[in-house]
Amino acid sequence: MIKPPPDFRKEIAPYRVYFNWEITYKCNYSCAYCCFGGVGGVKEPLPTIYPGIDKWIKAWTNIYQRYGSSEIHFAGGEPFFYPDFMKLIQSLSEIHTMEFSTNLFWNPEEFIKIIKPGRARIGVSFHPEFVSFETFFLKSRKLKEAGFEVWVNYVAYPSAMEGMEKFKKEFEDCGILMSILPFKGKYAGKEYPEGYSAQEREHLKRLGTSVWTEKTLDFAFDKNKRNTCNKLCRMGQMYAKIRPDGQAYSCCAGGALKLGSILEDSFSLLENPFLCKETDCPCWKCMLIGKEDHWLAHWPVPPDARLK
Ligand code: SF4
Ligand code: SF4
Image 1: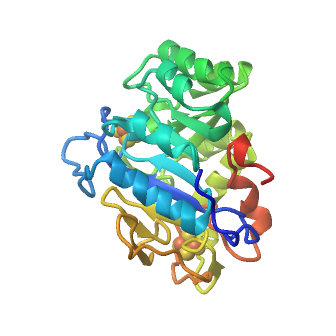
Image 2 (image 1 turned 120 degrees about the vertical axis):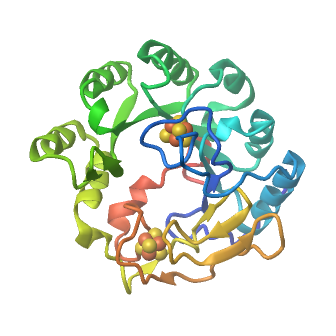
């Protein structure tokens, strides 16, 4: 294995670099609440590129040599929809650890064969429009039984709120936490999350038993918390978001800095924290300096990367 550099930001919270790689905005589902996927009239924000997995592996090896073993969060779209995805992650798991946001349409057996449980965490999103609860539940449980950390995400879409309490209980009875994400967008002429009635908000808060969900809801419902103007943030220094074309950005906000393409030598993380100018930060776990107590625990890594 190639050795990481000795000074790879181990002393700076959150003590390793995190990447959120939106490898493709394509998806095999078309959920009504999704701004990607195949929803009618919605265009992918950016086309997917296919430079070949060897080029991606080289780019991530370069990152390993410069910034050490990092955490790659694969998101999308649906990351497992990318061609040769299993081969790609098998190779990257030797140098980096991983997290996935996926709809779990794929075969867990194949994944279990190639990825060690200590190297990956898996956030599975349950979309009842496209898969039955039974199928989804069995696949999630299989991954959990194979030793992976698994949790479920569920979007509280106004028309899908009825069954969520029951789903949550079934998952939690077998040790899998289910997080409820507030819906953002338009439904029946109302803008959400503001459009939830007082009763629905109470229901969501009652089900949001994890600190994670509570903080997500607080952030969604409180505009003041989203005003981060003139605050120093470590996103861009300890985190980068990568779009399907390989271009990296300091965070998800409109005013994020461009950090170059990971496929080219131009890519570089910021050397110092970033003075934010946003009044509506999109990220509840943004890495504000001085607020580590709020966000540090929410940048976890798989077991193999802990305490190293
Ligand atoms: S599975 Fe995820 S990415 Fe695909 S359409 Fe649904 S919400 Fe969007
Ligand atoms: S506070 Fe939010 S908007 Fe500002 S740099 Fe950090 S993540 Fe981006």
